[in-house]
Image (cartoon, rainbow, N blue to C red; front, top):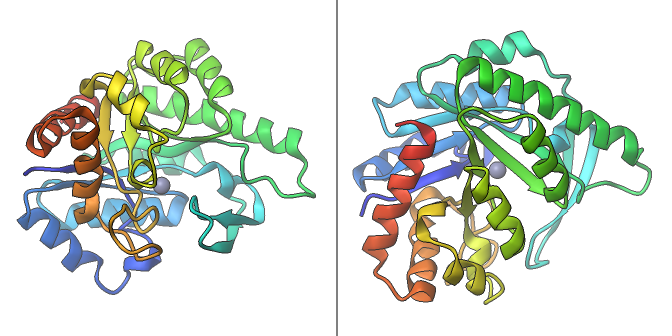
Length: 278
Ligand SMILES: [Zn+2]
């Protein structure tokens, strides 16, 4: 089955020893993978990885909204297994530097960028940070439209603001709402604007997304892992996730929709290619 992992971080340190081997195994299995940058260094590494492989390994470049602040944030894993202090770089967006990366022929999307109102800490100047996230997002939309590429959005607790921004500042090539965890109603608003929704291991942690999966047409979904995070069940809790484990996300969708996993692989991979212009 030709799975398409639209959101992976094999470019992160968790894979520094075996990232290349792992991607080779993905290609042998017929997979396609997009490695996503979350700041300049990891964006650059995602592009470098993409160039090490002839095809099926792609890159996206951007600044994750948490990295706009210098300091750290506490990341609690969705199943509350781990609580981790993650340092953030306080990167200042440099349009010219990102434009250079974004022009690369294996760069298929601009991201991950977006809004993260979930990870604010007690002493944060929330209004300042929200504004900084929104301003940076607008500049990335400008960049995506300049290079005519779709976007990869990270959004946590900010769907209404993201929708408003996208309505007022359309992205020509649309994109993917990665790790979608919103309601059925919110999902339909993004779909109406032309976006695809990325589903990952979170949907395997219980039945919380079953209704969403059942009621929304498969043509609106793409698969992702967000590896090394969000390891799907039935795999061991807290184990390092990797692109090959995306089959468990597909299996869950197949089970909920009552269709075959082959069908899920086929349609979601078509969706990914369509939205990423491949
Ligand atoms: Zn990510």
